[in-house]
Length: 236
Image (tube, rainbow, N blue to C red; front, side):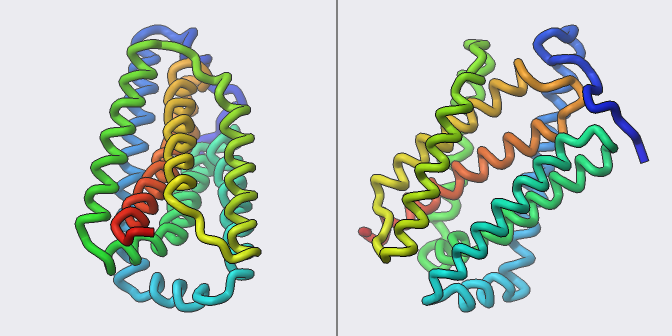
């Protein structure tokens, strides 16, 4: 087991150019690996029938969504805590892996629905997400602005969105395209925020935590782009 100090490495913004470049490379390699692992996990859940069984259990039982969302939020916080752990590198990878599995399990629902509708919707969502992430990444790296100030606004926005989602479950109203569009903007802001933190806020040895932050932001963006396209295609 490789033990670490809580503050291993130095702040990326203060590191030498070679160390910054190495950190960024490791972070995006881990992000690519996380996305590949996510695709495998989702495929396994769908092909083994777990996704359909999960959808069947949730059908017509709104209260179960409260349990699922609460469990997902708890697992996400635990995964993030492990990924930022100064105890060991193994604990950091456990956090990243735990989040990939949890998000993969949850996102089998919209992905399965998209596959039932039209395979093209899923592909278009992936391409649009990739294009948006590419543009936001270019913005963060080219302007070199520290967007860490956006963190509090994103947090507030997430709580507001969660409240709207829970209200929809309680009172039975459907979240329309306006909500999906607003969440795409919020998720895009989260990607920009996470990318900026990679340049300015992380320590040079926190590439696992940085990749988890990026993956969760990209995953959120993909989720709502997919939801928007499905709602738009079905005419909701």
